Structure formats: C-alpha cells, structure tokens
Amino acid sequence: MKHEFCVLFCTASEEESDKIAKTLVEERLAACVNVTGVNSYYRLEGEVCEDNEALLIIKTEKSMINKIIKRIKEVHSYDVPEIIALPIIAGYEKYLEWVEESVG
Image 1: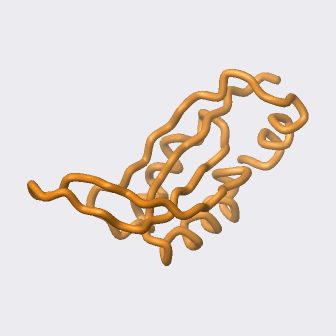
Image 2: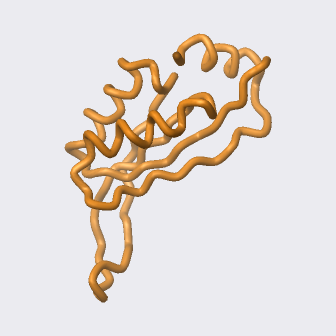
C-alpha cells in the first residue's frame, strides 16, 4: 500500500450527522463514516454544558483531511465544530485496500 490512512472524529447534532456522513461518502472524501450517539460535556461562555450529539468516525486517506475539514465546515451549523484527525498506524490490509479504492 502506498497511501497513508487516518480516522477523523467530528461531533454534530443528531439531525446533521446523517447529512454530513452521506455527503462525505457520496463525494468520495471518506470510505466509511460510522455515526453513534454520545453525551458531550463542554465549557461554553463560562458555563458547563451537556448535549446529546452524534459522533462521526470517518475513515479516509490522509490526503483528504483538508478537503474533509473544508466540506464539514460548509455543512456544519456549529461555529467551531470538533474536527480532529488521528493516523492509522496499522490495520487489516484488505480493509485498508478497500478504503484506498473507495476514496478519491
């Protein structure tokens, strides 16, 4: 394999998460996006807040990170959406080959 892979994480409202996930896969920016419910606790304007959100787990190639960030910002309603990326240092070779074929 010649490509580097990563997983991005993004939180969104439950309503927005499906739109973001479908957009990323349809536009071949991501091979797969898992969406699961989470309880988020965070500080906003000096107050501790709690929300039910969706966590998007986005599998893609490292070369797609900036395009994904740009696209999420275009679709996302939050002023400062959580978008972070972690490298995939190892994985099942057949799965990573599928990611490579599915993106781009």
